[in-house]
Image (cartoon, rainbow, N blue to C red):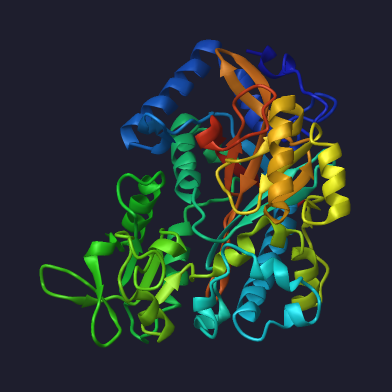
Length: 484
């Protein structure tokens, strides 16, 4: 199959594996050389092995539709995405810097609000934020950290640099798929792990456990850590169960926990109540405690906020952390980094237009066919307008939405997202756009995953990588090459 990569038609986008001359980039040389050595039949056999492995391991996700919830097998491409380790080390430093500043920002918002008093972030941005929780004012979580688990979406543009597309600080998901992608690839391409210098990803769950344990209000050797899930019908339930199992933590629902008269949280067990120290919660703020938020919620635990405020239990991520998840706040993050850390941002933001600003709104409305418009607090690729792929009718709808609630919308240029070779049919590679979601942990210490979850827009020309919108995924290799 000498022609597998020679027939690859790279576009005018930055390609992760193949350069502008059609040659493999340094970290992809061994990978592409190996793929070219396989026959078409052998390559197809590897692809079918991946599909069988996904079915065997039960790797799935849930899509919500009008007809009901549908469980789907995890969409996976067997051609890994490769990144030079030296490039990754710069991104890793930038991600560490960014989360540190964001946690200082959140802590300041719930205490002195100096960032507002000093004019760095306008007061109304926070006042109008859907995720600012007045109920959290005055609380001081362990280590001053509110967002303990962050999934930051990175993209590479035409210049090959990493840019931050958005920060996910509420209940970021996807890390289990990063780990499972590696497990699948080791079955599909085992030979390459013998000779390639591919950095491992497997320590994430032990790092997550250590991060959560560092939050325990009790100074004991083995704090009780639980993963709080909304239940089996949640789209990320596979991940909740996976992480609990890998950490050796209990997977619980709200009905498994209660807050007693001592304002401590207990888990119901066959041996009687057992005190809980740390809750890794995968439930949105508004559903975690019906005494404080949604009174109709049956997902949370009555009294949980009371126990947290009194310092008797740690919640990760902390309620209220989502205030920094807002796509309007995102536009201010470079200034937030400068303000709190007195440093220049290592990773750049994507240029962002705030529709609440009259001049910027006028520009957005005049260029809806060229821009990507996003609501401030949606996730999963929902509620977006991708200008170049939209109709005049779509653009008119968004013009009305922006006019009705300008604070709720931002716009960004349509990025020239990088591509990578993707096996789209038997023996045929085509470029598909992708992004990267690394995961950053912060507790007593900080840890960044080696690479992250690469999400791929499987439809030709599409820029939407979310699995709920038809996207797929690849294993991500951080490769040490000679001379590094």
